[in-house]
Image (cartoon, rainbow, N blue to C red; front, side, top):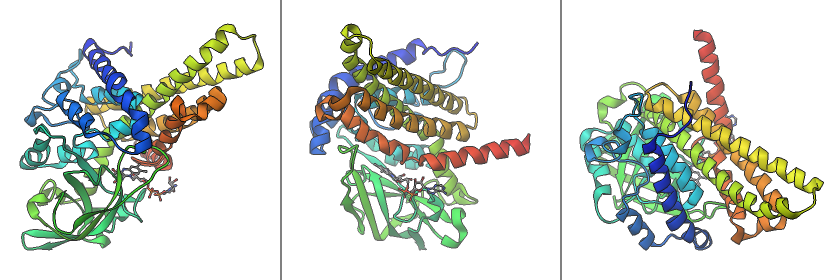
Length: 403
Ligand SMILES: Cc1cc2nc3c(=O)[nH]c(=O)nc-3n(C[C@H](O)[C@H](O)[C@H](O)COP(=O)(O)OP(=O)(O)OC[C@H]3O[C@@H](n4cnc5c(N)ncnc54)[C@H](O)[C@@H]3O)c2cc1C
């Protein structure tokens, strides 16, 4: 029999993060959306509480060495499950604020997966410092979003250095990041085999911030363009070292990252949809309690019931994908299923919930309006819904062939 219950430890983590989301994140979220800014005092408080976006590895005493390394009742590690439980609660608090929390962010998984021990120490070690620090993940380019294999940023070897030239766009926390994992190609004719990942630090000559984007949603989260003009980095900045790239590892490194981050992004979408569902349910409660039965009420009841079904189904897909990652079972298909379903389900749910609330649903101080704007991007970043469906169908065909 499959158990869907959280263990005592998982539930303690959930409750702790929920407390933080409710008491620290929610109070600043609406103002942060309006001003596009999160106060530094908030980031410092987050640091003091020991909360970070993206984990530190075992060697650095991060979550890998703490709760995440503790096995569950069946002897399976649980770092990925804890990450998605936390992601749902944090996004329930506010999705834009959570993306802006200090920590390695999306840059953490590639450093953890591909980095040498020295690189992990150097780049992840900074997050143990008292002051808030950020990492970022620079893959997308103006002509290479879904088609990441087509990146054009060039890396040319020059003695013990590489010289990087190119442009990255839509990089979360890109301007404030202390370092960015920059994906580049040493030979565009080699496709994925030519890809390399470099650690590029803020302040490196030639590395600058371009445009900071104005967005429909997630307005408090910084989305930046990064420009690389003759940026010289030492060969020690090549993530994983030269040997790592004998084959397709550079690109595969980026892909492995997605197997752990996609369920997390799905879980964030679940958290946003759940937050909106709770607001719409609260709004509707009085109507259900006192009003005469009417077609409007039964229609709204159906929208609320459909929202709850979608939220629960999406959460189960995210949990499954995270459990597989914890159990070291290949989960590319399930990670894409979780992300594709959760993001789309949340977009549709938010649309329904604004409808349930009528005009109140489009008022900024009623929250659901904000989350309606925030949610759309969850079906775009970390691989669009269409790309997830392509990944899923390719894997299904592969499974069929090997059957
Ligand atoms: C707020 C925000 C934050 C982001 N943060 C980061 C970050 O930190 N780091 C980073 O590297 N990137 C980041 N991104 C970029 C994000 O990953 C890309 O936007 C995403 O991969 C889609 O790429 P694109 O926007 O170029 O769309 P395109 O690839 O141009 O796609 C446009 C449309 O065409 C569809 N499409 C494309 N190819 C196919 C196909 N083969 N078959 C069917 N349909 C297809 C897509 O599904 C989509 O609907 C961020 C984006 C946003 C909006």
